View (tube, rainbow, N blue to C red):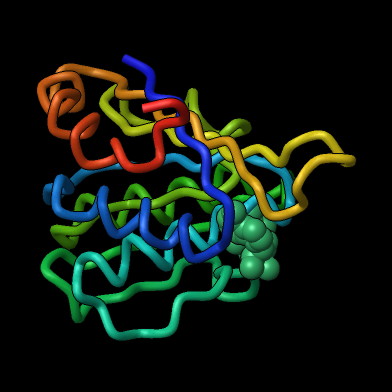
Length: 166
Ligand SMILES: Nc1ncnc2c1ncn2[C@@H]1O[C@H](COP(=O)(O)OP(=O)(O)O)[C@@H](O)[C@H]1O
Ligand SMILES: [Mg+2]
């Protein structure tokens, strides 16, 4: 199941994250792929705010894992930006997922997808052609595995405002 969305501003992308948040359950895995600057961390910020977390969300560049624990479900946020650390970072994230009841969100998921559980929400963000609107983003959400397929209808309804041409 795949949903194609378009956001026109960073605030829109925040709103998409906040719209997805109510569907999240303990032990979910969300994988975000896209180039640097595509808006992955912005989307995490939206999810965190939708879960009611009040911590500042930034890329976990030096800490490897950041945790936001003040919302409905705690978030473990990892960013696999250094390819030599992929396994370490994913292991850390998966440990968090096992130990604490939380949602694991992984940025730069492309390189790590095969290391992650089969059941996951995949979100791919892309910028448009260089000549087009610099703030526009295409967001493709893919529900992978039974627990996400079960939520596909809800996901489609929640993200309907950003579906182009609807
Ligand atoms: N539609 C949009 N969605 C997300 N971010 C956008 C959008 N338009 C502009 N931006 C800007 O692009 C940058 C995205 O940065 P960030 O979320 O850190 O990306 P990433 O984590 O993918 O490297 C931010 O400065 C944000 O304000
Ligand atoms: Mg980032």
